[in-house]
Image (tube, rainbow, N blue to C red):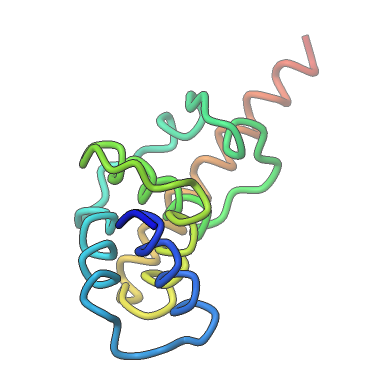
Length: 127
């Protein structure tokens, strides 16, 4: 088992058991994937994303936007964690680490993205 698989296993077990404190390998992974504050992600980034599981969103919410930001952060760090591992990391960070004001920023980005998405699709359907 390589180190990435071990971190993924620890993260999954940690999320499932809501264990605390985190083992050192998990803490390192959390810190590597956690998006920088303040968020630089925009609604346009989400609407133009060509990434499976995000491109065809019918509903935007703060948690989905946060997961996407975690994925982008992992890519920027040149981490090769599988998508499900980054999702588990994002859920743990969202539920246990991020303060309400940061969560609200991601919710606001999601709301603006939803407005833009609806406006665009309404215009496309009316033409």
